[in-house]
Image (tube, rainbow, N blue to C red; front, top):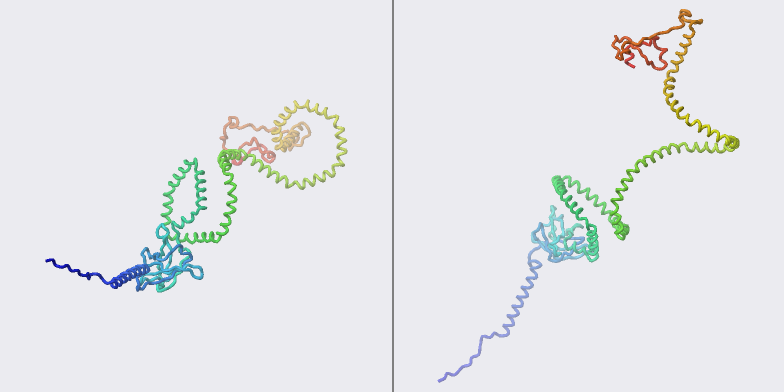
Amino acid sequence: MRRASRHHRRTDTEAPTRVAIRGLLVGAALIAALYLAMSLFNGVPGRGYGHVDVSFKDAGNIKKHDGVRIRGVRVGQVETTDVDDAGRVVVSLQLEPGLAIPSDTKVAVRANGLLGARFIDLSPGKASDDVSGGGTLRAGDDALTFGVPDALDTFDKETRGALAVAVGGLGQGLLGRGTQVNQTVEDVAREIPGAIAFLDTQLTAPAANRALVPSLRSGVDALDASRNELAALLAPTDRALQPFIDRREPLQRTLTDAPSSLVALGAATREGRPLLAALRALSVSAEKTLAGAPAGLRQARALLKEAPASLGPAGMLLRAVDPTVPEVLKTTGALKPVLTPLRAGLDSAIPTVVTLGRYGCDLKSWTTGWRSMTSWGGTGSGPAGPAAAFRLLLIPPSPAELLGTSDQSSGLTYKDPYAAPCSYPSTTHLNLVPTTKARNR
């Protein structure tokens, strides 16, 4: 007999209310987990973080949650950024609990990679007061350091175009000068060891380098004080260089021809030096001459004033002399063949006349003696009567003179055959002098 089937109602289905409550609980758990994850990004809730505000002149593109590091170790993050009434950027830092930040801590904004991210670098000082409980640090004006993105930002469209023109001009300037460029590279490579030795010397003398830094800073401060004036020079410099750019092809041709022109100029300069020396001598002589020119001009002026009275008789004299000029020319023409031998004879006689002039008093003494000799046989007045009026003294030459050798005698006396002019009357009659006196002459 078939057993009758029974239909039983399932009882494992939960009630909708319980399902809804469970869904609400799961959703709340998910929301709580999401909130916790988001809050953990800002820090662990309930943890006692330190807080420091940093005032920057320019903080760059620093953003919330950017890291804070001390000597490369992450110690916090950027919490908020704002701008105060003075226009400075105020960045609030969230720091790890228990981290002491001295009040003289230095702050820098540095690049964190090549994509533009940044972090704040703290260099703790040695001050005793701590500002991690809510104090404020003031960063220097140079706290922002520039990285690759900042450098690339400077190359905007206009800058890139100008750079392309500059690179093109550089290429044109180097065109055909490969040998010179290679020589320059070789020279630079040769100087590198010397540069390295110089740097090693500088590194071994830190005191000298520290003394050099203030001097460099003084020079940079002077340039910084004059930056407006230096910037104002750029526009006039651009205008001054523009003609060279516009006329660069003729300028290039001029520079190409310049070496040969300079060589020719150097040769011309060397050849012109004698002319310059002559011109200098002429200028010196002219200066000496011009010094007396005013007095000469005054005398010439006086002469010209007096000249009219004398020019009349002079004109009459010249008119009277004019008929005799041809005869005078004939006479001088006839004498011209005789003048050359006559001048040669006079030139030959001049040394003799000059020598005789120096011995004038000796000639006078000789003529006086000659007159005394010619009085022989006359009345005479010698010291022993007329018989002593004529004296003929013979001074024979010494044997050494006859043989042409030096005096080998006893050296007591020396005969001076060529006495000085006009010295004969003051010497002994025989003109004998001691040997020592003769040698001292």
